Length: 314
Image 1: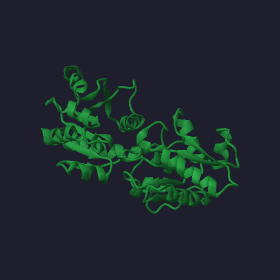
Image 2: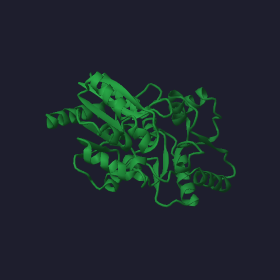
Image 3: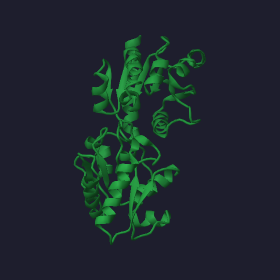
Image 4: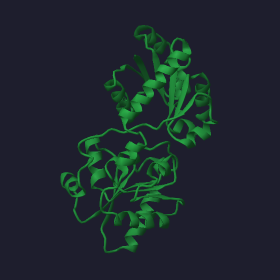
């Protein structure tokens, strides 16, 4: 099977979670080529249509998999090859983008949503499938907190809260996280607590930080199916999160992982205290496997979907 992946390349790179999904597909025997969209906004994307059509004529793909709604809209503007579109969050959560995503939904052979909330907001279109992005296994995920801290040169006695994103990303709501951590520190003056921004690290370092941290803290205003939560679960890292995206479903039943119903610093600080009391590794890794969210498992489901779409289009 020949697959063409259409995804944003505005930052001169493809999203890591898309690359990891594609790598799993290649390992399963799928031949893959990439089409990077460099335009911005609706007009910028649609200007890429002639180049995309030429790429399709040259490559002759059996199926196109577009990531995010605008890429799905662009890919579906041709009729030679069936299109599968995955909606990751901002393409549905942002009201000014959602109408264009809905056009893509009508034109795509199949629509993948990474969370139930996104599917609900989209209006439950035809040919819809709930399928979060998966995560990889790696050799570092099983490291103990002690060993990971040594490798990252972190203080053994300190409390480390890993903030799930960049502090300057408004959607991540860093002020709420900082307020909660500051409140915890006031209430537990004998403890040394530091919030670490998850920015500027390579993939190995991110894994090491997740093994080393006392907990991951997510305070985002909106999410789809946050990869950072699934990656932390693979490392057995305790998690404190507001009720956003599919986090509640992902961490359900995993001791050491907590979802805060409110967005108040006090409630978050209270859950941080509970997370800090959990000293071992969580069973997050086992939950990920049970939910079928390893990239190898996701790849198998995607290949079945691609085959079904090809049969429908014939």
